[in-house]
Length: 219
Image (cartoon, rainbow, N blue to C red; front, side):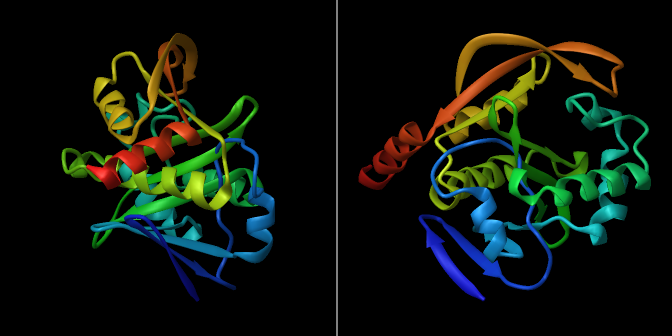
């Protein structure tokens, strides 16, 4: 097991215990190359542990996500949400590890999921936190960790993220991480609502992120 320090983030790689899962596209050190050598990735922050998702997470994921107040803000999450839905999701992301890095977010117990997915228009950041754990800054802390991992370890050049127009709190999280609005509102599907919903699009480049890190270091 090797620990690598990335600023405020400690990245721990563990060989032989499963595969990581991803979320958006980029250049530089490819995600595929990393998955050939690393079977599990663990990210740690001041309060959180982020670990590659696997079948052992099916029960708690389905229990937390079986909540319309969460599902209505996610594109591909149905409501109700059952164990089979969680099993299918975990199976799909782990079947293509070069295109998905999906992590469970844990304090003392799991509180949510965050991931990078390689979509047709680039690498995308997405996350959700269980409703009992809202308001503690877990989404922001986890998003900063995964963004650092994306730019420093994978070599992604640009990340895209988004939030539905009626989900302003998610926009605040993304702004804290450094994402910038593009003045683009897209119509995106929402399985839980059963119709398309307006979605803000945000972008963060590796160059912008590095400038932010430098500013924080010198301040």
